[in-house]
Amino acid sequence: MIDSQKIDLQQQASFKEVFDNLLSEQRECVFCSTDTITMCLRKVIKRKKWNPQKFVEKTGLTAVLYSRIKNKDDHNITLEPVIAICIGAQLSFSLSIELIQKAGYSLNGSKIHTAYKALLMSTANISIDKANQFLISQGFKAISDKNMYKN
Image (cartoon, rainbow, N blue to C red; front, side, top):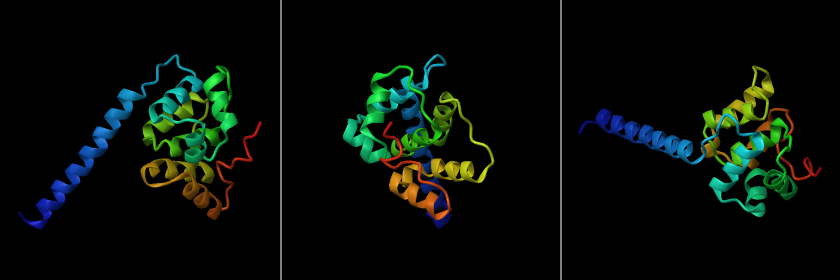
C-alpha cells in the first residue's frame, strides 16, 4: 500500500471515530424542544456520571452550582458556566451551541465569543484549566473559577 492510501485510510478511520462519537452523543444526550437549560444540563451531568466532586474537577465550577442545576428547575445560568460545562463534558461543537441557545445566548463575532468558539471546537483536547489559561493569555477573564459562582 502506498503512503497516500495509508493516510486516506487513517483519515477515514479518524472521521469514522468522530462520526461514531457524535452519533453516540446525540443518542445519549437528546434535547427536546421543550427542555429547559436546566433539564439539558441534567442530561449532560447524568451522561457523564458526574457527582459534585467530578463536576467541580471537570468544569472548575462550584458544588453549589451543581446542586442548583440538579435541584432547582428554574435556575438561570450565565453564558460562562454553560461554556465551562461544555468544555468539561467534552461536548461536540454542535451540542455546545445547542446548549448555549437553550440558555438564551448566542455567540457573535466579538473577540471573546471567537475565543469561546475556538475552545468549543477543541473540547476533546482541552481541559478547563487549559481553557482558562488560554483565555487569560488572550486578555480575557477565566470562564470558571470556584470563587466566581458562589452565589
